[in-house]
Length: 320
Image 1: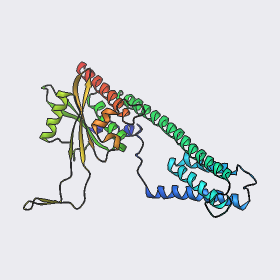
Image 2: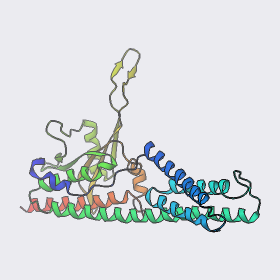
Image 3: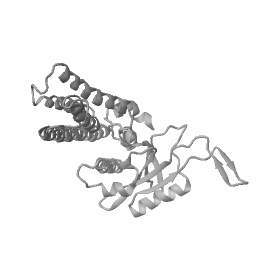
Image 4: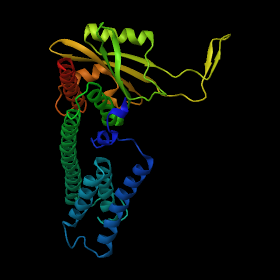
């Protein structure tokens, strides 16, 4: 069915931001820049004998902390703050090359500097997060606009349905969505797959127990899930032991009711692997649905728009 739409137009719809994955190279780079930058500033101050000739020269460290906080985030900025505090004390405050401080005024100045540095890094991180949130909301708004604009250019029922399934995978792939299908009742009331993202060589098929979950979703109007692990490579039936050469990901089949005014007219099926934390559990998704700033709230907004779009397509098809 995908040949009824231009997939290049679907790819023009923005996708969600990629998940943040811990990276050892990035961690080491941030650590090196934070520690190396603080030591470099300390070396310059010592080389040009700027302390104690300029009592407030420690404020130069704040420029480094601001740069790291705005570029990398909280970890690099906090590490630079602590390193700056220790380096300034050890290399510049007499007695040198020891963490002992002779004058109590120096203690106060150092701790005021440390608190100022930590607060600066925290405030910069807050502003960074707010900027990222504003960009994310702008991206989400554009996703909905482009989806509705492109889907409404098609008249035949299967075309907007295909736009929905391919757009859903394209948009939510960073959250772990790998395939999507729409099931609608036919004239006899039997649910049938009207659109899916898999090719004819790999159809989106459902087993009998999965079809039971689909019908349960239709009748109860609640999300149903099925989680399945990959089959073992070797089965030892005699000893009832399964052997795996590689442990594959758990596949989640999530059946979501397409519902308006307490009326369920279809089911959206998602196949998910390696989901992000806020998209992995339906119970947590429901709890975070209306929480301000929740990442998952966009999914519910997207689902409302998709439901309305599919309902209008069905009404146009019935009128035609």
